[in-house]
Image (cartoon, rainbow, N blue to C red; front, side, top):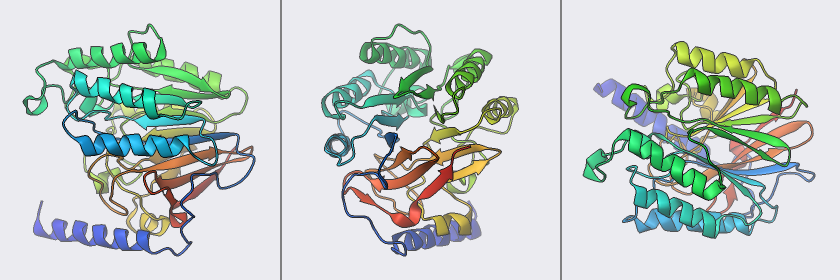
Length: 334
């Protein structure tokens, strides 16, 4: 990185933080509740918990955040954890994640778990584990089956919550896989197509959950260059499938972007939420460690609320229970 690039990034970081912290639309009282009445589906979205058995603080963050969700003034119907459950793909940390989910997640909420690059691609990283990516993938599927009572051999699945469909996509470790990138097969893309057709048949929104963003949305190239799904044949098919349907919401994490105000997003082209060719892309901050731009501390995520004619995306800190009104987006349903 050249000095001029470093200075540009530093200025962007500081300005984004300042603009996000200035409460020009106010700060909501620290209570987890919906923005309006008559919410038809209320979701808590978090990503990148990066659990390690030796890192107690991240465990406490997740337990506290889930406990606050359990006591929310507006009941939470679904909790989405958008990947990087663990830091180094070790089985002990994966077991810890599911143990915390079992004991602390809201009792009546469905938990939608997504595997990220740290859960598979980082197998063997820093000598924490000595397993292959294929073995890490097998562990992800094994613990999924144990928790959900499923019997799949795939790292992708769908779930219905109150009549709304969630489609979870994941790394399949094609030809040895990648350290940070996703590799998927045509079979998984066909699954996505079929599930979208089914989920949107009655005009309801559908939520596609995948750890990786695309390189050209949500400012991923500014925040972390080369971190998204590249503009290749895979990405083209992936996007074109979603663009066939109305009211598709794509939920990702991975880039550790932090909570960014809408003004900062427009100024530096790093939006947390944006619509491209009819698809709404939602980028989550990391819950566990290391955010960049905007609000950078841990415990952050978003609440996604579905109403009859719109969806509201509301970034929130699940530890302090603060919503930041200058970061909210509203999308009308088609």
